[in-house]
Image (tube, rainbow, N blue to C red; front, side, top):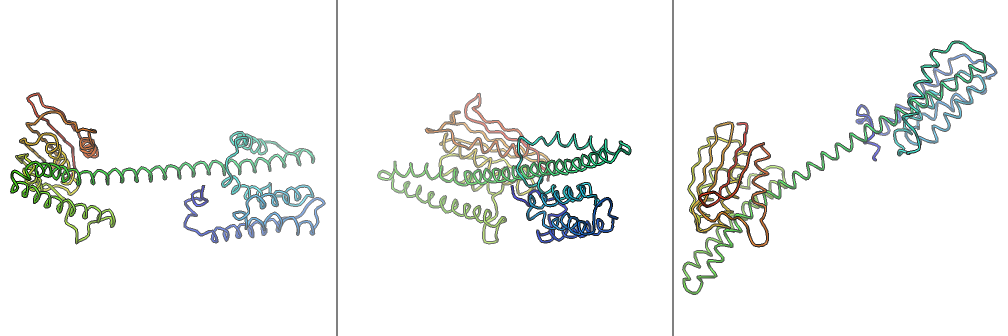
Length: 379
């Protein structure tokens, strides 16, 4: 895991050099405190001049070489305890141990939880035990120092796990956002391409069948194919432009809305599907208008692909809080293409589910097929 992911939010704005500077300040503060304490026991000025700097100065590099710095400070603190110098209760070693616990990979054989519990008990016991003999006091100080080290280790591991969990959650959210964006792009591309290609396929089939007997009708079909292709290419350029820049550039046409349903009905009529429009919505947010347009577009595309020639009724109503879309036709109720069902119904359902709405699609008892969608929105 990257070190920056394990860094405290308080220090994330600091560079690595700045953090090392903070550690250098802590090392100097440690030296000032320890050198002002009176020496006791058999300790000498020479030993103090060697061991105290050995315990404090390496702390400035604890982020650069965590393990070597911890080893040096631990040895120096132990030497201070042994020769009777002012002792820091392994404070310097604990300060050096924290980045080791924070950055090293977890070892299953290290019982971090047990170390934490034992450290807490030792620290509590040391605070409650009264004066004792010299040897008992030495052993008690050593156990207390080890408890301080254990507490530092446990704190480092706990912080590491919490930050690692936060980093994993952030990555999951990022991956989910990428997946959602891919799904949105796939849905938009499907909606743009499916309608136009279905119309082109229908008119191309007409042109092939009547090319010799009725060349004028074949020519009309080719004109429809040309116009539909140009319209589809323009809409795809708009979509790709939005994906590249994150917002529609001035050179691209606006996203389609319910005002464009008339053109959609005219193109469907070229493929033999007569569409009756009944639209009563008023002003809608752009996203809601685009979703409604795409749902109607895909429903009409299904009629063109599966039921042409047929009549289709489109009813779109909105009251400022809820959108209702109903698309019915009088063609065959089956909606299965050779080679698969396609993704049209799935895409419509996903659009409705984005708003927490309801979607149904299926054959009507009196014949034909019906698509119904209803979802709330904020105006």
